[in-house]
Image (cartoon, rainbow, N blue to C red; front, side, top):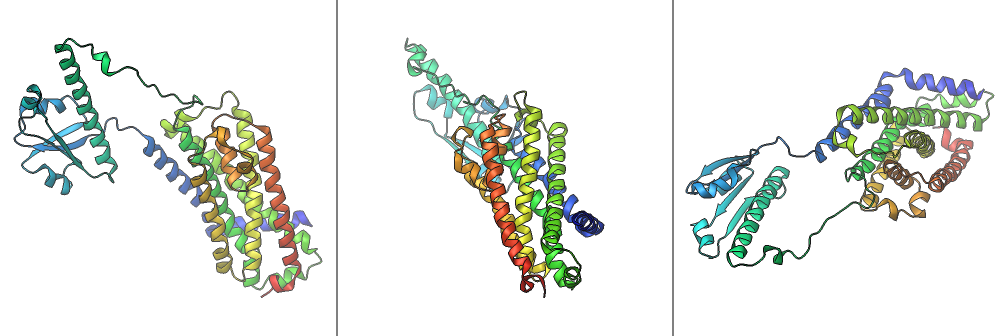
Length: 385
């Protein structure tokens, strides 16, 4: 009987084209857009051209500081700041009068950069120009020290070299936030329509009474519906992992370079699939509860919205936490442990203790929520309108 109810609910869930669109295609489209967005976010500015406004009165020698850089297009104007405000240039460079003469005479010379720090292109251009001027400044200092017979190394007693302790590509941290977020959103968005329809939808359509009149135990019926929601969420989660993996492998460059599984690809993929199914079970339990409480599909969806929003908070908590700083609580708290464990896996770390803590804590919560749902489903007050 359980199998028959489960098969019937699965067929009903995938028979509706609107539900199929919301359940399968919408999450995939959203995840594809997110993947492309994150790839563009970490892409370098190679090949991109920026427009820099300078004064018309600038000398040829002063302009030569910038002419060797192909990605900077020079625009001369009487009022470079106005060009920036009008959006015709990303930044403006203003040099003090007789800039090179002042430097040669040992006098103070000033440089003013005008741009919009809230604009990525403007900030990038100002950073490039600042590096150019900093390099030019070091050249002048070196020449002055040599002219005075002083070793230039006296002003640079040591050098600083920064290395990643994990030895991984720095972009993997961004990927460690992207994959769990994509997975959590996909499972939640994919399972939500089916969950709302299986309980609140039955009450709204007045078909729940007919189901309860059948000689089927309510616990069996509840478990079959929960299993349906779990199956849909798991299918969406696995499809999402496959789609995102293929997109990263074939359509991205920087995200692909950031992935390193340290010869444990099979194990890591297997654990990722397992934790996706466990999270789908947890998400199905919450959505089942909101659907039982809701009297209509719309009301059930209103209750489930905060559940979907919960998946956004771990990004804020874990964005500044390194994998060596992850503690017990990161793997014991549901939803947060999905992000924590997948972050470890993407860094190529497989800690079975953390895996068992994650799965165990989720199973405990699933059992508790399912018991609450069973208590409510046993009462006619919650299953009938």
